[in-house]
Each structure stands twice: as C-alpha cells, then as structure tokens.
Image (cartoon, rainbow, N blue to C red; front, side):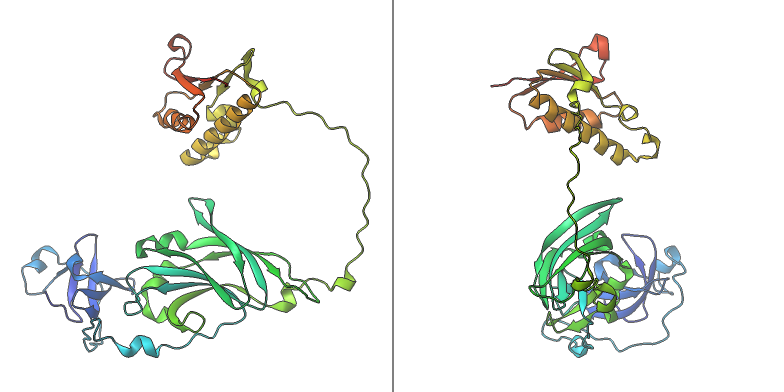
Length: 355
C-alpha cells in the first residue's frame, strides 16, 4: 500500500498511531506521534486509517493534529538518494572527549546498525574506562588508550539496543610525555535523551569520522579549571616511617561456620548476611547470596574442608539452581541434597574430594 504525507496511520504492533510526515522509501516512512517526535516505521507495521474507509470505524482514535505543511514526497532508493544528508552542516567540535553514534548505512540515518566511537579531540593521550549504568549497576563496556585527535570503535549495536547506552560514566586519565602542568583524572557522568536518535537534524557531518553522526559531549578541555597546580608549587612530600603496628590475624570466613572437623554449615538467607536487606531489590539479594557462597567455598577449599552444608531455603528455587550452576565447573566437587529430616528441601551438601 502506498503512503502519502499526511496519511493517518495506526500502529499494528503497539498502541497509538499518528500521521505520516515523510516517505523515506516505498517500505519506510516517518510517523509523527502525539509528543511531536517523528519516528521511522516499516509500512508493514502500519495500518492506514482513511476517514471515509472501513478502518476508521474500528480505529477512530485521536492522534493529535494533522501536520499543516504538506512536503513533497521523495521516493528514495539505493540509486536515487536524497542529497540532503550530503549537505549537512559540518560539526565544529571544541577540544574534549566525545561519544559519536554513527549509522552504518549513511543513506538511512534513522534505521540500521550503529557504530559507537569514543573520540579524543585533545592534545593528550588518554587512558579511559567507559561504564554503562544498567539496573542501578555500572557495567564496564571498554577500557583502552586513545592517542591525541584520534578515535576508537567501542561497539556496533542494533538500533533497538540504544537504550542500554543512555546512562553511564567515563573515567579518564590524561597523559603527556612532557608537560609543564598536569590535568587531574576525571570522572564524568552522562545521560542521553533517547528521542534524539529519532530526529535527523541531530546527525551532523563529522570530519574526524568522515560521516554523519550524533555526537554527545562528555568532557570539554577547559584547561584553566582542569590543570592542577604548577609543579614548583607542590610541596615536597616528606616520607615518614610509621611505627610497626601489631597486625591482628583475621579469622578465615569458613571458620565462622565450622560445625565439625573440616565441616561447615553456611546459612545463605539474606537476613543472615545483611542487616539492611529490606532495602535490597530481588536481583541485589541474589547477587549478595552468590558472592557470599563463592567466597565461603573458595575459603573452604583453601583450608581443605571436605563438607559444607549450604542452607538456601525453599523460596522459588532460583538460588538453589544458581548454586548448582556454579558448582558444575568443579570436577572435584560432589553435590547432594542435605538431610531432609534436618533441613527439609532447603539445603544442599557440597563434598570436596581432593586429589
């Protein structure tokens, strides 16, 4: 079915709809939704709602006002590409560190795979660590060294994975072989509005990449604020030997749970591991339990324990399954159900056979 600018459409795979604002190709159009954003959709995901047609009887919804401006329809194909993207304004970057999101297919900026680059537009070598924030936890995505006025490809992602890159933190150490002044290491958090990826005017030509990209500023090189004190202003550091302190030998973790020679009983209920467990989310509770399990197991093997009983409780069985998954990697370990009379279905026995 052919679509024209101004057509009212209903989304087939999600709620809502809108009006066609641009025909990208015979199989792809942009649809303006109620919040004012234009988002690309495949025509197979749309249903045209004709005010006089049968569909209007079933899908007569208010999708906002119809666009006033009726633009000329441009049918694009690989052999007939709009010259608009080649006329984009070239982006003049200040000195600093940037993330660049570059569509692999420069003909269709709103669809397809995206290459993500970290750009070092400065005169320093940088040692960086890029961390993404997911479910209240920082995940290290990449760490490396990038030379002055250079770039590094971090990852190539599908368009639907863009939400994983909206929040994070960059840690940077600035390095120069010879410098009169030093720049202190920096931590910079960032947050990107996802709607920006669905607006073509946010993609500008970038000389460093020789491509159209959406660029996110992470750090600008304001040298007056970033540079530390001159080296001649730094005080000499006096090294003073501290008196020898008596080091109290820390009791091993597994000994806290010892119930017999070379045997231990470890309670993995979160109430036994944390005092403020009521504030923890379910996945945080499971992480805490697995961390304690692995630490106690390693310590038990270090001290040649032969049997450890892990009390996991009944619950929904997720912790027990995770424990067994962790133990499959040990050839010398045998797993059994603990005594039903003593623990019911809430515990397992781990037997360690040393070679």
